[in-house]
Image (cartoon, rainbow, N blue to C red; front, side, top):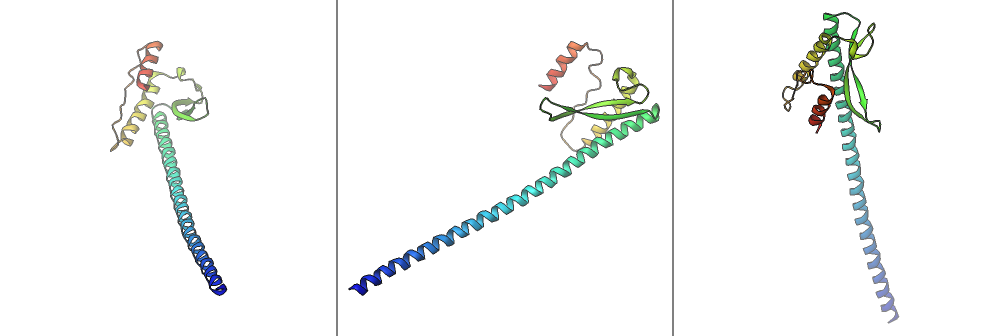
Length: 165
């Protein structure tokens, strides 16, 4: 009888150990799957980061192309002292919220009030042409041809707020 009880106890222990080994193998398989999923997610994130970097590079290139074309037009029509650029506009938290077109002249200074309407119109025309060219095949773009030129400041601010909303 003692041998039979001992044998039964050993069988129970062996069965228990088998079950433990099976659970550990199942857990190992789950962990391996989780690790593989994490590796795949990391690869996807790396690809997304690469795409974002390319997108930023392309945006920067487009911005530089617009600046270069507008500058070239200014040089051709006026003189070599002009330069066009988009200056970054940041919110209170330091986040980039937009680009402000700016005309620079090495003798006149950087205040847009120092420029005649012709200079502003030429740059505006160049930028509009580039936006039309860039927008081919994309969603429609609304281009307003100086619609606010004859409005006083209060009305101009109301229109801008309306368009922003």
